[in-house]
Image 1 (cartoon, rainbow, N blue to C red):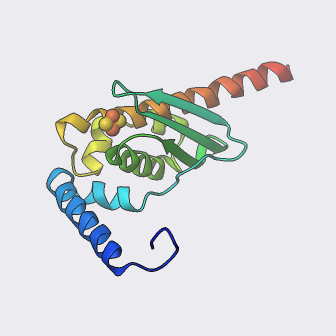
Image 2: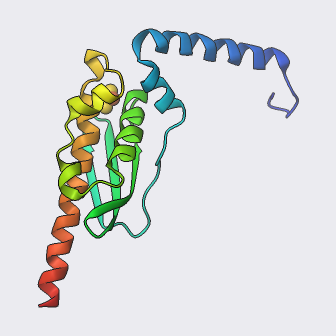
Amino acid sequence: MTEDGKESPELDRIVQNIMSALESEDSKIYSEDVIAEFKDPANVGSVADADGVGFADGLCNDTMEITLKLDGDRIARCMFFTDGCGATIACGSRLTKIATGKTLEEALAIEPEYLAGLLGGLPDDHKHCTSLAVIALRNALRDCVRRRKEKEGGEQ
Ligand code: FES
């Protein structure tokens, strides 16, 4: 589409070529799982009326926020938001998928290396993306516990 709103097959073709070149480059760097998760991420956004909110920022200045909704001791809903790279989006997507349905303790035990393994590995300069996601999740879990204790303290 041009500025005057007309279709431009030439521009579409150029954009398509650029996208194909980028995808070809990505496939040399990232696993199929990372690319699939990045292209169609799950659980993007924020849980309404969250029971816990966790934030993390990385050495690269990328950030992630994870919000959780609990059902008893289990995670009923888990969503993420990031301004980070494609690998970070893949990490947030996969991590929120696997955390959903887990107890707080089970989710707290998820390690960055485990997440990297589920994604078929990450290049060395993107290994910290898994830590960013896992730290955000752990902070959200701690926030759930803190809020619960506050609520219990308030009820006494
Ligand atoms: Fe820093 Fe992905 S979180 S490059």
